[in-house]
Amino acid sequence: MSKNPIYRKTKRYTNQLASKVFSIDDARNIVLKIKQLEGLSPNSIMNYEKVFNDFDQFFGEKTDIAMLTADDAREFVYWQLNEKIQFKNHKYRKSKPKGVSKGTVNTYIGYAKAAFNILVGEEVVEENIFESMNNLKEREKKIETLSIPEIKKLFKVLNKGLYSDFREYVILHVLLDSFGRINEVLSLKKEDVSHEQKFVTFQQTKNGKVRIVPVTRKTLKLIHELNEETEEFASQYIFLTNHGKPLKPDTFRKHFREIVKRAGFEKRIHPHLFRHTASEMFLRQNGSMRVLQTILGHADLTTTSRYAHILDQTVKQQHAQYSPLNLIEESDKRKTRRTKK
Image 1: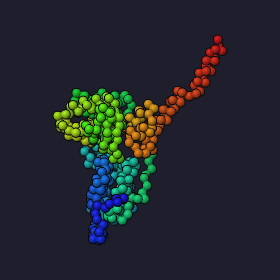
Image 2: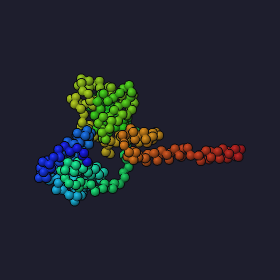
Image 3: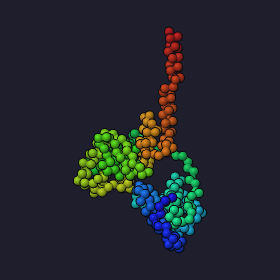
Image 4: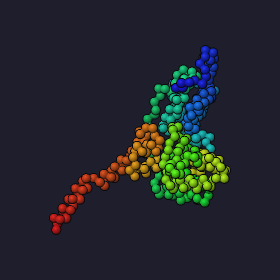
């Protein structure tokens, strides 16, 4: 809930407020202004935008937001789950009918609750209509990852003699080596890379907290080579378009889909798979779950524990290899051989 309303709470203001109608568009402006003043990450601001875009689509942007009820909130969630057209009017994605995933709906419920908490604090609405709404139960899905041959196949189709392909080659290495999200990686500036200390600093993170992650010499070398390619643009950003502008996530995704198609993949491969893949490979090499939590920037170990099944497999493999019974059986075999003589 907002502690400091952006309007003064004078008697005159309160009286005016009682008669003022706040549309959904008015509410959007209030929430976004407060969240921007709080220094929220661009990605989180964009998620609030998406929620209000859906409010506009479902309720109508001129609707008096104070007139909405908990029943309206439930109808909104039902619409998202069963009727919303996904990627409607998206530049690069084809529209998908029949609703969005439960995970996406739960994300929207979280942002809607937070938005209405602000509106209650600003006395725009009297109650948070999403407050009593629980998250939808999700079926736990297996985390998809890439195999080493698949990663090499992607690398192989990239023509490093072309700037755009070489840039993507570097991005994929940074994604894997830093375990970063695509938005975090593309927001890297030259000052965020320490060649001496061998780490990168993610300033624009999902939770708004700065994260420092070690990277290898090879990744640093590739970043250095890319910086030399783009030095004529004198930009503070590392990853640039052919015209010297900062590369946007949607632009990268569009080009990356072309690369995936060029490599002959039929399965869906997206940038976040590299974060999952890096996490899996880290644990398979006996990396610590706690260290992985730090690298990924998860506030709660529960989130990182999604990768626990990998540890289970590693435990089984190592148990089969190093079980005490192996020594006993080996001893029995030696005794048996001596008896036969």
